[in-house]
Image (cartoon, rainbow, N blue to C red; front, side, top):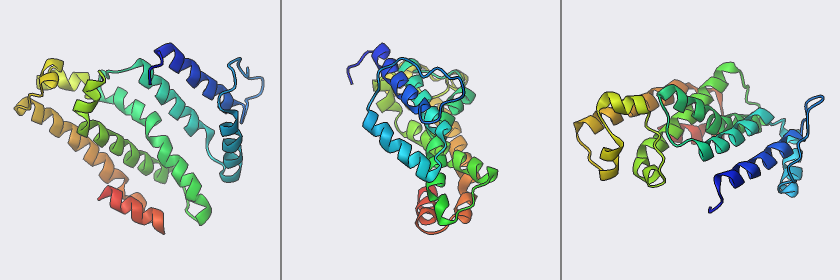
Length: 203
């Protein structure tokens, strides 16, 4: 919207404090932000209790939203992947937890494969939306990779797709494909509709 970065961060902090109240740590400061959408958090509290949703995943999402306000460039792939671990991976972990009651067994390997798939999908979204993100003055292509391939922001802005650009994008696509393939065996640990949907997504 039209809110300033400071306003956005303050509203996100209000959400964060509301989330902390769902499972306050001993001696934790509840914060002083005004309640934000209390009805929403009442409903969320019921769902967290019903499905044992991991609150850390929700905190990670809020941290990613805050990062969106303050960060529009990423120095390297490691930094970008850390962002994806907060902006995308939590969604898969929440989905697995929601389906756990159907008899799905969730172990550390399943969580890692879920993270790989979700982060890969986030990267795929970035690589197909370079121009869309650039219009918002956001560049998710790692800055060191751009320099190594000889691709500048000026080149992105004029839409020049030469061999340097293709080489840069081939590297990014290969990373996303490798992560997607790494996570693909997760479909064999699932069953029912979620397994079918995940197979279609990976394909």
